[in-house]
Image (cartoon, rainbow, N blue to C red; front, top):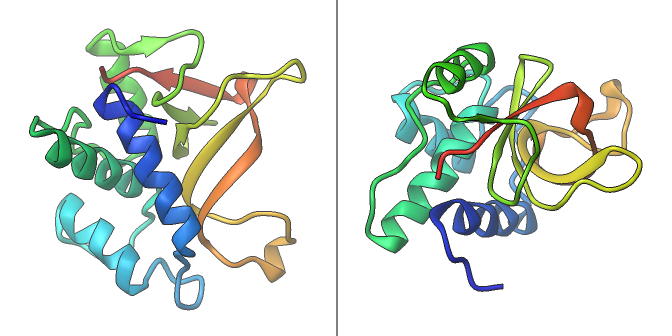
Amino acid sequence: MAADTVAQLAVEIALEEANRGVFENANDNRGSRIDEYQRLANSTVGQKWCAKFVYWCFDQAAKRLGGPNPFPRIFGAGDLEAWASREKKSVLTSALGDVFVKEHRHVGLVAGDAVKDGTFRSVEGNTWARTTFQNRREGVYVLSNTKVARCTFVRLV
Protein backbone atom coordinates (compact mmCIF):
# COMPACT_ATOMS: atom_id res chain seq x y z
CA MET A 1 0.00 0.00 0.00
CA ALA A 2 1.39 3.42 -0.91
CA ALA A 3 0.76 5.90 1.86
CA ASP A 4 -1.06 9.07 0.82
CA THR A 5 -0.81 10.86 4.18
CA VAL A 6 1.58 11.15 7.08
CA ALA A 7 -0.95 9.17 9.17
CA GLN A 8 -1.04 6.28 6.69
CA LEU A 9 2.74 6.25 6.46
CA ALA A 10 2.94 6.27 10.29
CA VAL A 11 0.89 3.05 10.27
CA GLU A 12 3.21 1.48 7.68
CA ILE A 13 6.21 2.40 9.83
CA ALA A 14 4.52 1.02 12.95
CA LEU A 15 3.81 -2.25 11.14
CA GLU A 16 7.48 -2.41 10.10
CA GLU A 17 8.45 -2.04 13.76
CA ALA A 18 6.08 -4.86 14.76
CA ASN A 19 7.55 -7.08 12.04
CA ARG A 20 11.02 -6.17 13.24
CA GLY A 21 10.27 -7.73 16.63
CA VAL A 22 10.73 -4.83 19.03
CA PHE A 23 10.52 -5.99 22.66
CA GLU A 24 11.44 -4.66 26.07
CA ASN A 25 14.53 -6.13 27.72
CA ALA A 26 12.74 -7.43 30.82
CA ASN A 27 9.27 -5.81 30.85
CA ASP A 28 11.05 -2.72 32.18
CA ASN A 29 10.08 -0.08 29.59
CA ARG A 30 13.63 -0.32 28.21
CA GLY A 31 15.35 -1.72 25.12
CA SER A 32 17.62 -0.19 22.50
CA ARG A 33 14.82 0.58 20.04
CA ILE A 34 12.37 1.54 22.80
CA ASP A 35 14.94 3.92 24.26
CA GLU A 36 15.15 5.50 20.78
CA TYR A 37 11.38 6.12 20.77
CA GLN A 38 11.59 7.63 24.24
CA ARG A 39 14.62 9.84 23.61
CA LEU A 40 13.03 11.38 20.53
CA ALA A 41 9.82 12.10 22.40
CA ASN A 42 11.13 13.73 25.56
CA SER A 43 14.69 12.53 26.27
CA THR A 44 13.51 10.35 29.17
CA VAL A 45 13.79 6.55 29.11
CA GLY A 46 12.18 3.92 31.32
CA GLN A 47 8.70 5.44 31.20
CA LYS A 48 5.49 4.10 29.73
CA TRP A 49 6.04 4.43 26.01
CA CYS A 50 2.84 3.66 24.08
CA ALA A 51 2.26 7.32 23.10
CA LYS A 52 5.99 7.85 22.55
CA PHE A 53 5.95 4.99 20.05
CA VAL A 54 3.08 6.59 18.11
CA TYR A 55 4.87 9.96 18.24
CA TRP A 56 8.02 8.30 16.86
CA CYS A 57 6.05 6.68 14.02
CA PHE A 58 4.49 10.02 13.04
CA ASP A 59 7.90 11.70 13.29
CA GLN A 60 9.51 9.15 10.98
CA ALA A 61 6.62 9.50 8.51
CA ALA A 62 6.79 13.30 8.58
CA LYS A 63 10.54 13.22 7.93
CA ARG A 64 10.10 10.88 4.96
CA LEU A 65 7.41 13.15 3.51
CA GLY A 66 9.30 16.36 4.30
CA GLY A 67 6.68 17.87 6.59
CA PRO A 68 6.04 18.58 10.25
CA ASN A 69 5.09 15.92 12.80
CA PRO A 70 1.39 16.50 13.59
CA PHE A 71 1.51 14.48 16.84
CA PRO A 72 1.79 16.86 19.82
CA ARG A 73 4.46 16.27 22.47
CA ILE A 74 1.82 14.93 24.85
CA PHE A 75 2.49 11.45 26.19
CA GLY A 76 -0.21 10.94 28.82
CA ALA A 77 -3.28 9.25 27.34
CA GLY A 78 -5.77 11.40 29.24
CA ASP A 79 -3.85 14.57 28.40
CA LEU A 80 -3.86 13.60 24.73
CA GLU A 81 -7.64 13.10 24.83
CA ALA A 82 -8.12 16.52 26.45
CA TRP A 83 -5.87 18.15 23.84
CA ALA A 84 -7.76 16.44 20.99
CA SER A 85 -11.07 17.65 22.36
CA ARG A 86 -9.82 21.23 22.74
CA GLU A 87 -8.26 21.25 19.28
CA LYS A 88 -11.30 19.64 17.60
CA LYS A 89 -9.25 16.58 16.62
CA SER A 90 -11.57 14.00 18.24
CA VAL A 91 -13.65 11.90 15.85
CA LEU A 92 -16.43 9.41 16.48
CA THR A 93 -15.48 6.76 13.94
CA SER A 94 -12.00 5.48 13.28
CA ALA A 95 -10.03 5.49 10.05
CA LEU A 96 -6.63 4.14 9.05
CA GLY A 97 -3.94 6.26 10.69
CA ASP A 98 -6.06 7.63 13.51
CA VAL A 99 -4.60 7.58 16.98
CA PHE A 100 -6.73 5.84 19.57
CA VAL A 101 -6.83 6.24 23.32
CA LYS A 102 -8.12 3.15 25.08
CA GLU A 103 -9.79 3.57 28.45
CA HIS A 104 -8.01 6.91 28.99
CA ARG A 105 -4.69 5.13 29.62
CA HIS A 106 -3.22 3.53 26.47
CA VAL A 107 -2.39 4.95 23.03
CA GLY A 108 -2.01 3.19 19.68
CA LEU A 109 -2.62 3.47 15.94
CA VAL A 110 -5.68 2.35 14.01
CA ALA A 111 -4.43 -0.08 11.35
CA GLY A 112 -7.74 -1.22 9.88
CA ASP A 113 -11.47 -0.67 9.72
CA ALA A 114 -13.80 -1.71 12.50
CA VAL A 115 -15.47 -5.08 11.93
CA LYS A 116 -18.93 -6.36 12.80
CA ASP A 117 -17.95 -7.55 16.28
CA GLY A 118 -16.94 -3.98 17.25
CA THR A 119 -13.17 -4.47 17.12
CA PHE A 120 -10.49 -3.04 14.88
CA ARG A 121 -6.93 -3.88 13.86
CA SER A 122 -4.31 -1.83 15.64
CA VAL A 123 -0.57 -1.53 16.04
CA GLU A 124 0.60 -0.66 19.53
CA GLY A 125 3.74 -0.30 21.57
CA ASN A 126 4.15 -1.00 25.29
CA THR A 127 1.69 -3.88 25.16
CA TRP A 128 1.63 -7.66 24.83
CA ALA A 129 -0.46 -10.23 22.99
CA ARG A 130 -1.86 -13.72 23.39
CA THR A 131 -0.40 -14.46 26.81
CA THR A 132 -1.21 -14.07 30.46
CA PHE A 133 0.12 -11.07 32.32
CA GLN A 134 2.66 -13.24 34.11
CA ASN A 135 4.01 -14.60 30.80
CA ARG A 136 3.85 -11.39 28.81
CA ARG A 137 6.60 -9.99 26.62
CA GLU A 138 6.05 -6.25 26.27
CA GLY A 139 6.77 -4.80 22.84
CA VAL A 140 5.25 -3.63 19.56
CA TYR A 141 2.36 -5.78 18.37
CA VAL A 142 -0.34 -5.87 15.72
CA LEU A 143 -3.62 -6.68 17.43
CA SER A 144 -7.07 -7.39 16.05
CA ASN A 145 -9.17 -7.30 19.20
CA THR A 146 -9.15 -3.65 20.26
CA LYS A 147 -12.74 -2.70 21.06
CA VAL A 148 -14.13 0.46 19.47
CA ALA A 149 -16.41 1.06 22.46
CA ARG A 150 -13.42 1.39 24.81
CA CYS A 151 -11.64 3.99 22.69
CA THR A 152 -11.68 7.61 21.70
CA PHE A 153 -10.18 8.49 18.34
CA VAL A 154 -7.90 11.34 17.36
CA ARG A 155 -7.47 12.38 13.75
CA LEU A 156 -4.30 14.40 13.38
CA VAL A 157 -4.47 15.00 9.63
